[in-house]
Length: 375
Image (tube, rainbow, N blue to C red; front, side):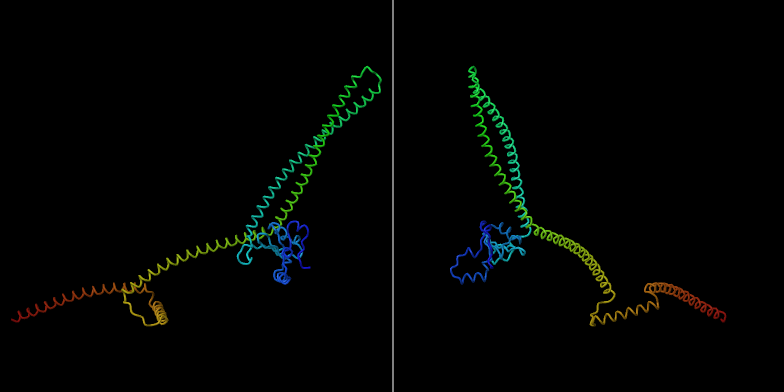
């Protein structure tokens, strides 16, 4: 009940059950093979093409068939889970025999070859049809000639009977001539009959060839239909793979654009970092010139806190006394006023010194004048 059923049509194509092809004397071994490998449900098929054709469609799968093994060692599993495995792999057959693209390409090539064969057969069929038409035309012409010749023979025979019935001895020569004509016509009729028989035989042969050609065309059309049916799912998978490949390419292009943008941002960041680094180094040099670097023993948190307090104090002082630029401008202006006042004070001190000298000289002159008067 569980054995695969091989019809006489399959056996005629050299397709048999694996269990029938094995010679096993020990029934225990046979039972082990049946239990472990299910050899009663495995087919042996000579050609891979026959295996694909037979197992690709669920309507053509033999009853109870679990798998099929070909001459090349390839394994095929029937529809609806149709798949094939290559038997040349060293490990157990776990890899698909061909890719989807290779299967589609092979199927397309086979379809193209079958189309070319079909065109050639159609050309031969057209030539055979034309030849049959020509032969039929010639056959009709020969039949018309045969009919006319038979009518002539009938007329000659009628004339011969009329002449034989006449007892006129004056015209024996005409009867002999008519008999000679009758012999010639009979020979001609025999030749025409021979030609007619040969052409009829050729016509029958051409009809048989035409029937064979039509059968071949029908077989090729069946094979093409089966290949197209097999190629349909593969083409769907191929189109799906193409769409996935296009999506992957689009994502790759998007990632490339993102990478390019990130690279440009990274370059800008590096340039900004170099500029900030050079600026920090320059400010550090200027700060070192103003004040020597002092080793820091405080933590970064304390330094940030003190820096924040200093910023608050600076902000409060700027709010009270004005901004740094305003204070500097006031300092410069008052310094100029101070320097001018200092210069004026210096001039005043010089004038005072001169006035003191003049006063001293006047006092000396007055004292001398008094002394001169008193004396």
